[in-house]
Length: 119
Image (tube, rainbow, N blue to C red; front, side, top):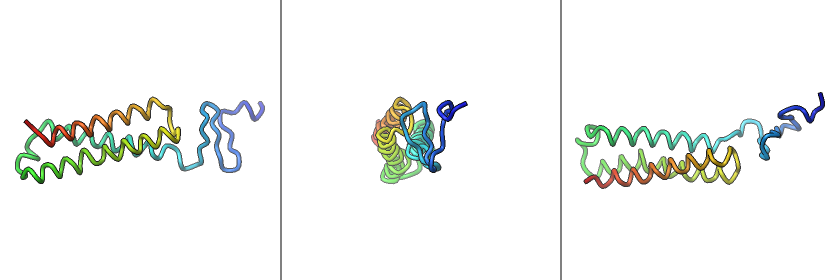
């Protein structure tokens, strides 16, 4: 067994994975992608709560409803879309994974905008 047969070879604190062209430093694996995934999922869940039950928003004023939707749905999804694009540029994961979560985040931004204007 030679060193070229190993799937990943540690070399001076740098791990080179042979199945991708990306050099990954230990402890820095997919940070931007994970944040994008988390923010997109969080925005999706909170957006679903706001769409399916009017009770949390029904008792608030329109200004507070808009602020809550902006802070809990639109802002995390916007940040997640930016982080997903940065992850795609850094090639942290396969391109289709990053694109899926960029699209999810953009969809949640549009859904949040639609929630701001019910009717």
